[in-house]
Length: 605
Image (cartoon, rainbow, N blue to C red; front, top):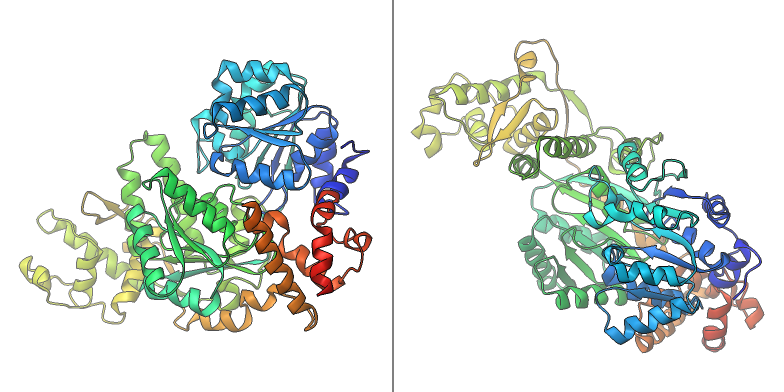
């Protein structure tokens, strides 16, 4: 298809009347031949920023993406829109690759997706030289940054694209980047002189909640049954064993769930991912190996059962919820052992001192977010350099926690850790310190004669759970540290000011009331999902049933046919002709021709 301009392509192919936010400015800049670095949140419409210019400019848009397992779905979705798209990666048979290469050389592709490692191959570079390139799009550009959370060595060679094809515009895109990451992306991709577009990182439809981890299985089950029954969602765990354990636990409790981690056979991973994309109401329990590029719009929740390693990683992972703009939940259960485990992993990591320091800074920022007494969203956006006022839609806004002067309590704990270290030079973990403070004569306390310490029993004003919270917060504030194979507690140099009464310590008091009850009654995502009249609601369900059947027949995810938002618009407007149906947002020319008559039949009853 030939297009008069970007808005013509947007309307005819994608069925939208106008661009959102900075999309228009980015698209026009790239169409004019300019380079760009685009930072835009997940679900913000990054892909249109290179897809539309690829349709308007002469030649083929070449998209560099690490998402090999998802390329087929991406291409299927574009072809369903009438876009001539193809991909080249290691999953294809030789004859399949040969066909795509021939289409590219003949100028019969609008978009060609490539894995970054293919650009190390001379044969790929020679192939690209045989065709006309409209632009280079470098997706998931944070993969080039060692400061970021998902470094991929293959991305380091992408700066050479500009050297070999200096007149071809490049657009690099990512959903997360601090100032440090942004500068490194620009430097490594030689994009310093390109225009930088930074959209708002705010996802107002996502409710951020962080709870104290007590009984994680029970807490997760309450979240899923109480607020997200029948919803699709992702549960993130730190270890492979945990993903298997929690997936089995959910299945045993009547919730359909699948595991996903790098230790599974690749065919099992692919099958589980395909089921998650194609089926409604399925929960994926996964390590962070899962999720990048997942374009499923109706993920209603993302739950973390272990502390993420960085705010960037947390933002990227939670951003997979609510891509359709409807209310969704980002829920994290976090406890003392998470802090101990992360500190231990950093100390034992194979990287150099600078790498460990970067990891520590990432963890410190994540801990600050967890222990915040102010708006979670404002702190999250502040990490990315964006100012915001209280959002009214996170746990600290809905149920503000108290902060209290915990100086004396901190002194008690720090004194106990100091005395434990100085008893014959031995060191102990948090459990021993808490037992001493609570005056418990355990076998270990008696064995080491710790019931004779002056601090024995001086902490009865708090219970064990509260003391563990104090330990966690002192670790977060840098007054305590973890060291050694057995995760023993030691004082940091900063602790001396607290013990010497030169510094006060403010602590966050745990909110004892159940947050889920408040949230499920006033902020339950399902309540706002369907904004339909009583007459339109059964029509919407009929359209969903038709879509599910069409998706099964074609072997593609349901959202490739139409998003829920488009089906709701159709159900509400009840078009009586193809012309009227073509006016609905999200119904482009190709989809109108392909599905229009079928939809009108459903509407006619």
